Length: 320
Image (cartoon, rainbow, N blue to C red):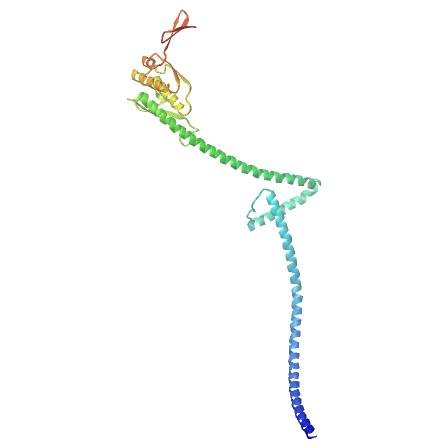
């Protein structure tokens, strides 16, 4: 019984302690309930604010969705416009200023007004006929761009041809001038050269031959005497032949008729020199020219008949 009473006493003491602990927890729970009620009220306010914000966001979301849809339609229209511009032959978009857009919109309004006033008088089949014309216009536009490119290529080719022509011409002129000066000096011991009448545009002007015979001032070939012109002509002929393959033969008719003996000798030496490349047939009464010939023929008339005498002597009768 004592042991039992002792355990009972200990249990009662423990129970008292537990009651005290229970009272503490009850007080703490009551405090927590008050705090819970306060936070519950704040949560209610927050939920009400969230609901209000949701109600405010709803029309904004609808506006955003509408703008996204409008943007998508605008992008599709823009892509279609780009394709149409490319089909018209334009590879790059044109840089448009805002004021240009305003002007264009004003023109569009005016044109739309004119269109509305004319639509009643138009052929109702025009819309059906428009598409083939539009397709043809696109093809023509592309073709025009192609022709522009071809035109540019042709112009570039013409410029290259013109440039090559000028280069070839001046190279030939330089060679011709050098050969003419050399030949003229070898015959007359004077000076001769060629001058363009219009050096800036050589193909619109002519070519002047300027000579300076010994003891005379320089002059154009047009002011020279008949004999001097003959000498210049021979020099110019041989100078021209230096630009290409020499002719198989040359025929000169009394080109030495007005030359003095010294110049006749020089001319004969030049003709002899040219016979290395071509055959030269010269009609002359000068002994200096005949002395340089490989073959000499004489012609005379007797009783109405022309006779040809060659060296060695050989008579050939030719009807007069």
